[in-house]
Structures are given as C-alpha cells and as structure tokens.
Length: 194
Ligand code: AMP
Image (cartoon, rainbow, N blue to C red; front, side, top):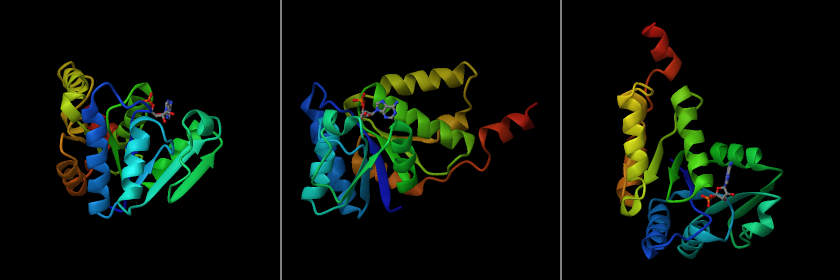
C-alpha cells in the first residue's frame, strides 16, 4: 500500500474533534509512509489533512476539477496538484492513484465518493480496501442503515463486512493493510443462488 485516497468534507464540521482527527489521520499517513490522495482543495477537513501531511514531510496529491479550483481554493502547496476537466475525471484519477480509500466525516459529496468506491468493490471493479474513520460516532447512523439493508435482504453480509471501520487512524490503516477482497463478486454470488 503506497497511497490512500481520503474523502472528506469541504467544511470543518461543527465540532473541533473533526479537525483534530483529520490532523491525527494526516500524521498517521506520514508515519506509515503513505501518500495522501484527495480532492485538492484548501477548505474544510480537506485543507486540514493536506496541510498536516505537507507539514509532516509527507506526500499530498490533489485532484481538482477546473470549476472548483476557485470555489474549493486549489491548494498551491502540495506535492502534486492535478487540475482535471470535470468530476468524473477527478474520481477516476483519485481512484487510479490510490491503493485504499477512506471517508472521514463529510456531507453529500463525501458520501457519494465513498459509495462509489464501495459499490465498485462490491461489483469486483477493484479489490482495494475501503474504510471509514468513524470519528465521535459520526458514521454510526450509516452503519445502522447498512446493517438494516442486510437484515432486509438487500445486501449480503460479505459485502457489508467489506467496509472497514475504526475511530482510530492507526488502527484503521492496519485494517486496510490486512484486508483481502472477497473471492467472488456480487454477481457470481447471486448466480450460485439462482
Ligand atoms: P462535501 O462532503 O459535500 O463537503 O464534499 C466533499 C468533497 O466532495 C468536495 O471536494 C466536493 O467537491 C466533492 N464532491 C461533491 N459532489 C461530488 C460528486 N458527485 N462526485 C465527486 N466528488 C464530489
């Protein structure tokens, strides 16, 4: 594992624990010799984690669409900043550059990015680990909803278990490193049960 893609809010959140956790996660990436791949902005938790990685002597690679360079304040002090035509190019490049994916707390954009890579893993488009940094129980309601989808027969437990979770950045990185993708993708599994 060389680079971790981190999805996170373009806002700092209402509680300082989110900023503190973004700093702790940035330090953990540097200590583990892992590059940060992220959305390339300077705002919110995005800016916090990128600043922490750069200040710690690590590598931060940003990928930002032209339209958002001004809005999300494209970070000028990164190891690399790629300006791409649109959101689809951004997500593809972020995914290609990364060996694992982590969502920190964020809004609709963060959730969209998390669910895209999670569902791609479920379909077998990639075999990379996907996790959430569950700061202060932020993701507990989402975990409950996913458990509900399993109970109601819309998701197999195998795919629920693919999503790694921890409140501690170091422990989460260890889980990502230990992860093995399920042998079968969702459709192989469904065919066997027809
Ligand atoms: P948010 O969690 O809404 O603050 O957004 C966090 C990041 O996700 C920001 O950099 C947004 O530009 C980005 N984002 C928002 N919507 C999308 C989307 N549909 N696809 C990819 N990134 C998005």
